[in-house]
Length: 253
Ligand SMILES: C[S@@+](CC[C@H](N)C(=O)[O-])C[C@H]1O[C@@H](n2cnc3c(N)ncnc32)[C@H](O)[C@@H]1O
Image 1 (cartoon, rainbow, N blue to C red):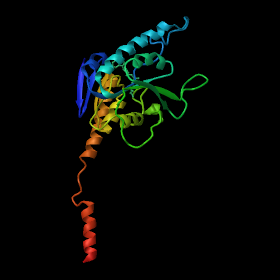
Image 2: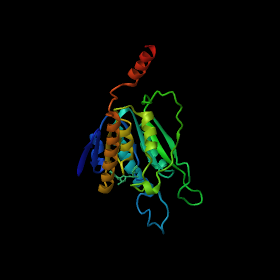
Image 3: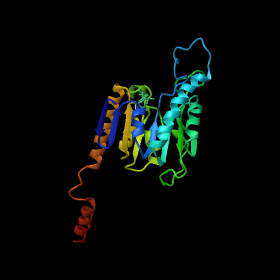
Image 4: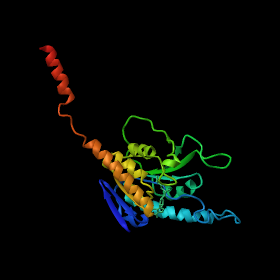
């Protein structure tokens, strides 16, 4: 572990998440976006050899270890959300299946097409794992398993695969309460942290790349400052109700 920053209710680690995750407990949600390309190695350079199950086993073993640590760190009523795509979902799925009561796929619909060959990508998947009795906000709404949010424009991104904060806010609003602790173990530029702070949740973030860690610190500080401004906005000296009451008393005179 090389650095720890405390920003309001957020604690950010510049570290490998496998060092930090075993120290966490009673988390209300883990929302994370690990590297999920397949095969996990040789992806760019593979030209002359075929596809094999061993390609997938590297990523599978990595996720199995991560899922076991995540399960220990989550509260019984907590939620795990892991971003992935159609090829990594089946690799991750068995790791979560054996540990939680429920495992299913949410779809992030980006609302427009992006890169891709012939059929272009318009969605990502989110592996969602939870237990019977998991917390859900009683807001009277029916929540779809398709979450529609446009991606952050490339010109506005600080990280090549940065997620839109509104997407993280939707997950956290439905599955956590104010003051709950939310963690992102592959924090990148800090999108989950920004959403958590905006919603009044405590946050633990881990990122191993110093340049993304610094960006995450900046974004989370900014979100914290905006929230403080809102929370500590000066109370009007003459509350509106008093002024309205005064108007009536003048009219009565
Ligand atoms: C897909 S990106 C996350 C992007 C993030 N959701 C955002 O909106 O900016 C994954 C991040 O995980 C980091 N990472 C990969 N392995 C890690 C590890 N073992 N511990 C901590 N961070 C790791 C990478 O440096 C990368 O920034």
